[in-house]
Image 1 (cartoon, rainbow, N blue to C red):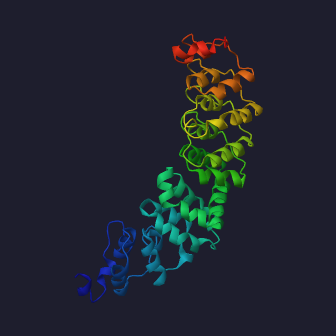
Image 2 (image 1 turned 135 degrees about the vertical axis):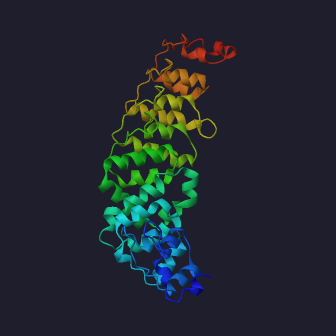
Length: 327
């Protein structure tokens, strides 16, 4: 109604206190199609900047908004990394997915591309990531590599932090990509308290077990501390020995993984905050193959927990007589 009376295109100059006109506001709200066309038809410039230097294209919150602007003369070459970074606070993922392929040839993009990786991955858990950005990154390996390489060039510290984050948030495809690209970062970077990526990968199984094992094997090839402990003093070997997460589907793999840890220097008799060793945890979780492995590899049978219990005393009383030899 207002636009129909706008014979002199005066609405092009209606602005908020921020200096944004109606086109800027509409783009940041993700409007599209007929609404934007009326604004452009009434004299609004698709390349007109805000007082802060932002453009309608950098403010576009929706893929349809991006498409409309490009079809109506918006210039990609006027964008900058600073503009896009400021726009992320109100941008939907679809807008970035529509825009990123068109940015690949711009000279500045490789230096700024990391902002998208941190935004698309760093704030996500596995389920949300699989519904939002996973398909885009999987189907565009060239773009994916640019985003990852840009982050590594920008900051090894942030790269290590993001790697640890995706390990703990169970985003296996991102874990795999980090390991494939072979960056020289701190692969022991803690995320939750003192928990390292290795501890994270042993703490859950929410993806294909073969993929999980491959990720662990690849990580063990890196210069990591296999005896790193979380805030409870538990190491990867203890977590594996307890069997939480592993026992449902793949406890037959535990001794093989334990062997890899031991070959890399994992200590059998480290005690956690409760004084429990890996052998204590194996008995407590009734992981008999792990019990056998640890005993055969020289685990100390005489160590007691802070409660004064031997490892074999962690099982219910009715089963203890079966393990009387472990003393």
